[in-house]
Length: 239
Image (cartoon, rainbow, N blue to C red):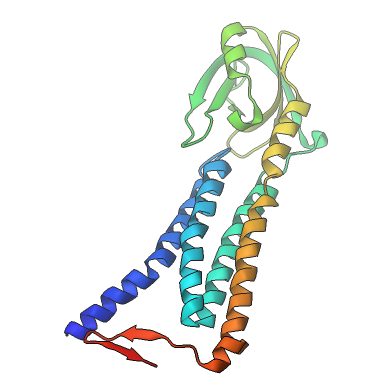
């Protein structure tokens, strides 16, 4: 019983960095989908999650475990790929031909709180009950609208049709462009342009794991029979 308990504790201690890193990776990927600009804290968490996994991979390399190295590298690469795909595909800006325009009179603006991200805003017109949503990460000019807009002012909105709301890409108040399509486009592309950076470090970690696995499996140190000590609960045995 004593020997089994020691082995269990040892196994937990050995794999704790891997579990902690995997937890941070999963948390980061969940943060990425929390809302607009959620990709920033999510990206930070994904990068932080790689640190304990790298420590774990170094340990496994000196233990000569090729499979653990390979699987750890693939896990990191998969997390980076998911993060990159989210930024690359989900934030694709709509072409101007895909957008619609509505003209009407201003009714109200409400805040839509976003967890760990800039707030979004709900715009309503007097002519209909539809919601037009302004995204914080698209540099939506909420403060200027709040300062200048009065109920009944003339509004022109450029938006993308959605199931529950129209995503605002342009906003004109009494003839003044407070948000242009070009500004929205630049903001989306700036976020979308982060995706290659999410793959650089994961690819390097995966490559390091692959090289380490090859060395463990076929390297000179493997053929020489490296000494590894294993604690069994009573004393160290050399194999």
